[in-house]
Length: 370
Image (cartoon, rainbow, N blue to C red; front, side, top):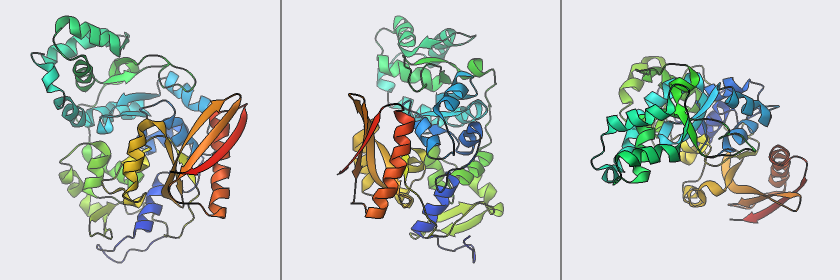
């Protein structure tokens, strides 16, 4: 473990990388119940169906798709817009805390659509949408928009949808989010769906501590990038007396929990295949701990079409699976060429991804440069 020599010790990029991978369960697969892993990770990016499954397969020893599907169907984990105003999968107990905490991020998104909401009373909008989604009732987003357009026919339909999800904690209900199944986005208010009350005053200090446990060492700006909520420095300052303080190679102040792992920079990091926009890529203001700065533009350009994979702990390429004629082909595009040893390790990891994603068919693996 890295030994600290004072409050201004500099952590190198590789030291930050290894610490982050360790917190993210990406240095080695672990034996951990799925709900515990989802809770530790503070939710999983879930804009699409497969990324949470892929995230857990990369982190947990013995993970199966059915395991997560059962948790979604039993409402122990839920999908809901929260951090950064994007859909995350999280435990029900976390959702009733993290959704209210993330409220400012959703409100900020709503402001981008204000021109389409001229004349719309947002309190009345929330009440009308709530009539469709509380008390055991569910509704599709389309049904909600149609109901709101009856009341405000001149409003922008997309703006009405954004306003509904900003003003109400709308959880997505199955079969949405279940691998191998489909359906329109159907929602219910989080508290009525889970039976748990929303936390009216989430403890930001506690959440900052949990963020460090999952993503540290980190700066205040990193914390804010993770959740999309600003003005969080006062809460970190409350924690300062119990935290270790470091700096990165650019001089940015970083905070960490005293007992958290900070492995040596040369700790081996096996290849990992991740889903689209895994949180390990999105949860720091400075993403250089996991990727070269210029690569994010390439990843973003592909949007939700490609997952990413790491080699030696850093983003190294993109991937996707296509099925045709009884064969599932994993196409991996590398940003820089792989060595022979790296390619062998990537191929072994890719084989496991294919077994998870496309069981019972012939598998193929192809490499190319981005």
